[in-house]
Image (tube, rainbow, N blue to C red; front, side, top):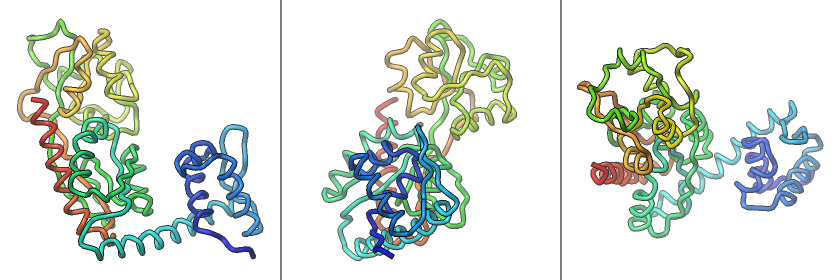
Length: 302
């Protein structure tokens, strides 16, 4: 059998994760033909087909499903070896792969990246934005070093440390400014705009309103907080957004923002990483920088 390279395994991992040659090539920072050639050489080295090639997407063969698990184990071991070497140094250098959920990343990133560049000038930060379930899996698989999500995650394989808490605020059309803030019970009777299924923030908002996982028809879905706020501005309903998002998302919308009566709905933002990660001491230091970045941003927004 011909020799299998780590580069081929990394390309195979990216292709399996994204099911698309173009997206996988972009993630790997190579051309699509180059990635395709490496996958073909990997198949030739293994003597079997890994990918079913379709017109718009690719799928793993039965052997490909088995092979990707082994490939990710190998890549995780190699990455952990590199992490152990980095952890042995006093300075935090090299590559940091960190994930963030979409209801945090746009608001936290500008402040956080500035602080990281100042504190760790030799650290190369790679950020991935995805839903909580995907980020947890990628941290577990070793494809991410850490992730910033809403807690709790409650996985015995992961360390989770709380960073800060933030309240959910009510966003209504501008003409509702000054009117009484509805209770959670009253909110159930209104047209509520929420993020689409899969976002943990959607589940948290439904929990505050004491609604079931299958909400009534008058609830409308959107893919981003920005779209939700613009829908409110257009008079389509009301929504809840996290406090950190308010300064950014409401600056170009004709809406009113109000706080609920105590106890206010809220969430705890935290950072997670594998308990076995050699980078754990550095990640604990990093979590303090994230904590201070989040608190600084929220203070400026008030």
